[in-house]
Image (cartoon, rainbow, N blue to C red; front, side, top):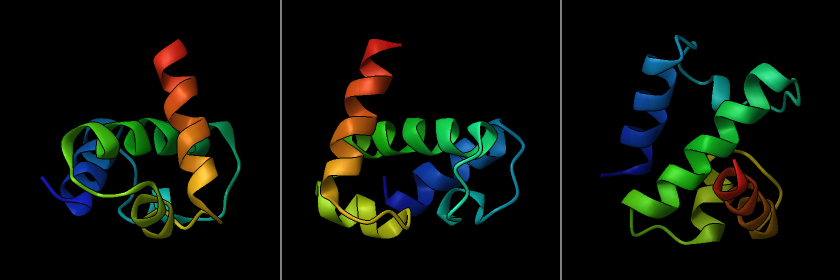
Length: 74
């Protein structure tokens, strides 16, 4: 799977517009699906934390690490 595949699947399942997860929005309705997508990206792709962070428009890899931990706690 690729990052685009994960992004597309999350947007499709949650009925979000394509590109929503790359927005800078911190609204719950965007941030939570983005965290889930980051977690799934780590699990199902060979992408690094930095690559995933860049794809989803976040500042750095530590945001992806934090999202991963949070989703595991759910």
